[in-house]
Image (cartoon, rainbow, N blue to C red; front, top):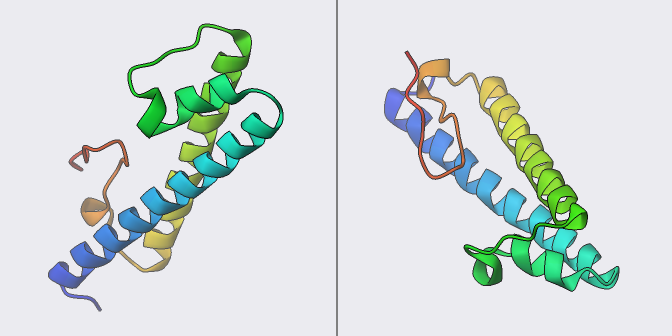
Length: 104
């Protein structure tokens, strides 16, 4: 069984991987949008170019919805990986959004 310190390190490694996975999927999605002629929508989704930018079109709303679905899929995958590693629920980070929610 892992020590509490190694379980915490494993959790952080998984969260780092989740962040990289989401960045990869988002970048691929932005590339597809650009190839489809939706470069403005892709720029809004890009953290470097779209910070603080919003797009109030149906295409923009749909793209943001898809991006959140991709994030959810990555988080679900990370949670499953942590469960398969046997990490106790109280040691699993709950969100990639920059803040971790404490488990009761």
